[in-house]
Length: 114
Image 1: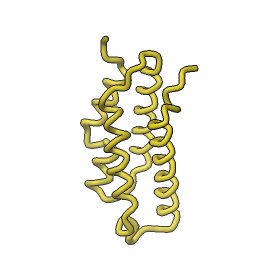
Image 2: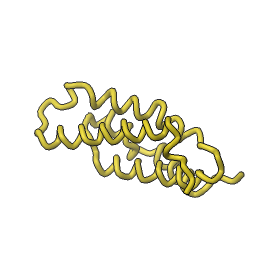
Image 3: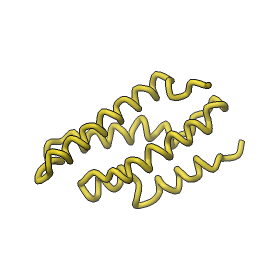
Image 4: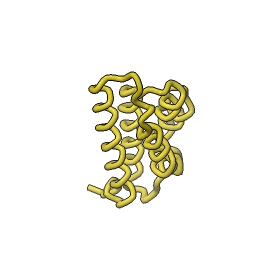
């Protein structure tokens, strides 16, 4: 099976300095634009592969190690030193979204065919 364009786009993104976990780790701050890009790329890949009954390994790794890594960083109280309350609320809402997305991944809900 040939690699779909969406997976190729995700792999290019994952290997770049714009990748969400890389940015959060290196810059020690939340980048909501990177978050949106990441989630859009991941969901596009999942949607493209729904009919194949396959889940590309890089996507599995995002859910099994990428999300827990991100959640670990942003759960640390030190992540919010010298930040505003609205920044903290944004990051915490994104944290809940990531946890919900991960739950849907593990339950198989993300792969339900229409």
